[in-house]
Length: 258
Image (tube, rainbow, N blue to C red; front, top):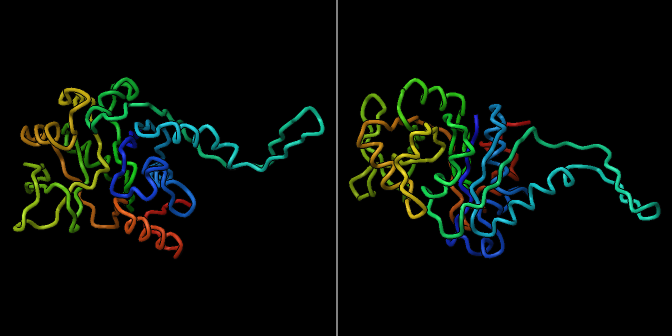
């Protein structure tokens, strides 16, 4: 099963670093947050990734092109035919497809552009700037048991994102803007999607979190998987520092790999 990661935005609210690189390539503990997201999935045996790129997409491509080399001990011998010898190495069991989905394409459009790479099967989808200690296996199980087109992760946390109205059977009834009377149940990403979802996306200008998800919810086809553990989106420099401090403490909740 594949995991699709949206990694093409400009990251304007963390412009201190995103003017040099895509936001998913901003580092936590010396590695891009995109790498952390992928390690979460890999901890549950999901190792086939499709990365939806846009802004400064060459930085992401170059990272993966050089990944094996960067994880190896290497001897560069300039005295004899300019040879390179790789000694010990530790890499990942990953297959990574990096797709340029356009500079100004919206989130729905980016998904639409990678339809050919998911082989007509259900797939995971998330964003390249958020980490969590979510149980990916239970998320998938919730989706399959629901029989619905899409499953999103519902997070109880005070944030500035769209609010979910959820029925007792975990069906999402609506997605709407937050107001003062609302609680704090929000869409935390980490989704599972059926290929039918592509029929709800018109083109490059479609914002996935608006019309497509709202329509799926209106049809009773959007399932909620509740996650009460750790979740954090790196939206600002302050968010980045909080994640960095957690990583440096040795108690990063999303680190589920050895």
